[in-house]
Length: 174
Image (cartoon, rainbow, N blue to C red; front, side):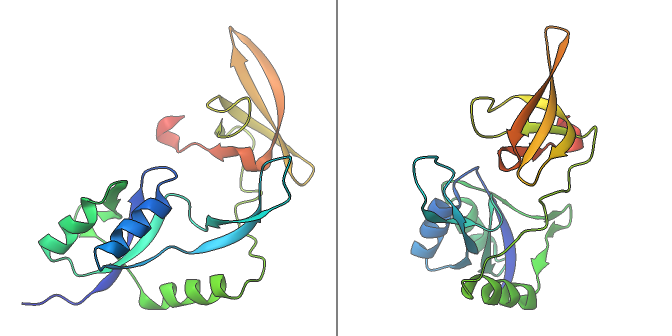
């Protein structure tokens, strides 16, 4: 019995989206990595660069035939297909088509994650001199800055950081 191909979300290692995307395409598997243009974070440059719309994820169009599934998972940087204990969950074709349309327009895309942090949530600094430091989100300071509370040696310090350099930690890592 031949299984129909469906779109699935593939989790990749951090910052491996482009490598996985390229390697999967070399294996003749249809893949989709939605990207958007953003300003480079480097202070000395004013470039617009392409970054994944969903960091750490891309989409693959496969059947769940064990050989094809294994071919995807054996790609360097691929982690797993998203799903539940019953197996990977397909993404509707309409969602993929919508993403293709949105990312192909060239218009600015504003993602809905800008002000989702709430006071008391645990965050991690992902860029800059404080990269790797965990702290507690305190408040937004203007449009692009946040204040986080960091504990060190029994003392607390409030640190102002660029919003884009902070990511919310899942509850299990807090």
